[in-house]
Image 1 (cartoon, rainbow over the protein chains, first blue to last red):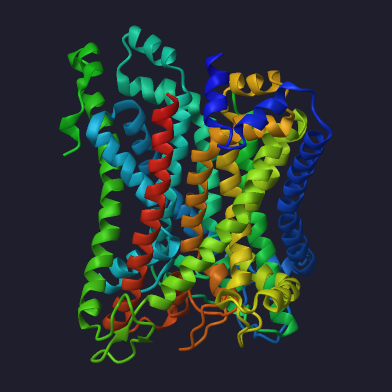
Image 2 (image 1 turned 180 degrees about the horizontal axis):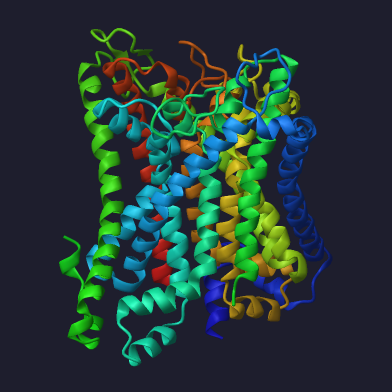
Length: 308
Length: 322
C-alpha cells in the first residue's frame, strides 16, 4: 500500500497527476494502448539503432581488410623496406609490439590492482579505505591522453629518457590499474562471508584464507576483469602517439628504439590515399579488432563457464 | 600512513605464531593501495610542475584567449578558450544524442526483450565498447562522413539562422560528425549502467503500477523511470567524461581550423585531447611541452569534475535506497 501511495506522489508529473491515475482505474483506452504500442516500437528501434554502427563498422573493416589477413606474409613479416606505394608487407612487428606492451602492462598492473582490491574488501576500514577508493575513482576518470602526458613529463621531461615501449606500458598501467581494482573488488564482494568465517573457525590465518579460499573462489571473475581491462588498453592510441613512435621494423626491446604497435600502424598510413596504404590501414584495423575481441570473448566465456 | 588507521580484529584470533605472514600479506595489500594513491599524486604533481613555468610565461590570457602560439619560448601566447568550447560542445552534443537511445536500449533489454535473448543482446551492445577508438575514427572519417553530410546540409538549410547551426567553410570534419561518432562510442557505457539501475527497480513498484491497470509503458513511466533517474543521470555524466577525454577518434575526424573561429557545430577545430595529439611529434622545447601539459591539466580537472558529479549522484541514490 505504501509503495502505491509513494508512487503516485513521487512519480506522476505535477498537473497531469489526476488524469493519469484516473485513467489507470478504467480499462485501457484506445489512446493509452496506442501510446503503449508506440513506446514498444520506440524501444525496439532504439535497440536496432544501437546495433547499426556495430554491424556497419565490423562490415567496413572486414570487407576492406580481410584480404591482407589471408596472406601468410601478414603474420610473418614486418613493413621494413615497404613504401607507401607498395602492396604487401606484414603486421608482425606491430602485433609483437602491441602484445609485448600489453603484456608488460598486465604484469605490472595485475598485482597492484588485485592487492588493492584485497585491501579494499578484506582489510580497509574507515577514512583510509575511503581515500583509496576515491583515488581509484580519480584514476578511472583519467583520459588516456592525460595519462600519456604524465608519463611524458616523468619519463622524458624529468628523467631525460627516450620514447620507448616501456614508457607506453607505464602510461597504460595508469589506465589498467583502476579497471582491475574495480572488477576484482566486485568479485571479492561476491564471495560469501560464510566461506571466510568457516575458514577462520578452523583456525586458518587471514592471509591463507584470502589466498586459498577467497581468491580461488573469485578466480574466474578476476580473470575476466583482467582480460577485459587488457582488451581496453590494447586499443588505446593516445599514449602511443606521445610515447611510442612507429617504426617499420621488428623490435623486441622495450627499453630501446622505436616499437611499432597496431594502433600506430593504422595511424601511420591513415592520411595516405594510395591503394596499398589504405589496404594496410584496414588490415591493421581488422587485426586490432580481432585481437581485442578475442580477448573480450575469452573474458566473457570464462565469466560464463568458469564458475565451478 | 594507511596502516595504522584500521583495526585488525582477525589477527588477534589467529594466534601469535602466524602473525608474521599475516602482517606481511597485509603490508603487501596496503602498499599496493599506497601505490594507487601515489599514482594519482604523480599525475597531479607532474602535470602541475611541468605546466607551471609555461603558464607563468604566458603573455596571453590562459582562460580567455583563443590564440595558440608556443613556438617562440621567449614570447609564449596561448589560451584555451577555443579548445574548451570545442571540447565541451562536442561532448555535450554526443551525450544528448546518446542518452535517449541508451535509455531506450536499456529499457528494451530489461523490460521488452524476451528473457532468453536479453543476455546475448546485451553482450552485442557491450561489444561496441570493444571496438578500438582509432577504428571508430577511421570509420567516421572515411565512411560515415558521406552519410552525415546531407543531414548537415539539411540542418544548415532550416536552422542556419542560429549561430550554432550556421554554415561554415568546413565541409568534412565537423564538430557535428565528431559528436555523432562520440555518441556511438559512449552509448555502451551509458546503456550498461542504465540497464543495471532499471533492473534494480523494486518489483513491488512495478506490480503496484500494473495492478492499477497500467500498460507496460505506463508502468515504466511511473515506476521504472523515476526510480532509475539518478542512475541514468550519473551514467550520462560518466559518458560525458569519456567523451571529453576521447583522443584519437576526434583527432582523425575534426578538421583543424588555424586561427579562425565560429560558434557553429558545422565548424572544425580542436579539443584539448586532439590538440595535444596533433602536436605529439613536436614536443621539443620544455616551454612548448608545458603549454600542452597545461591544456592536459585543464582536461584532467574537467573530467575530474564531471566524474565527481556522477559519483555524488550515485552515492546519494545509494543512501536513499538503503
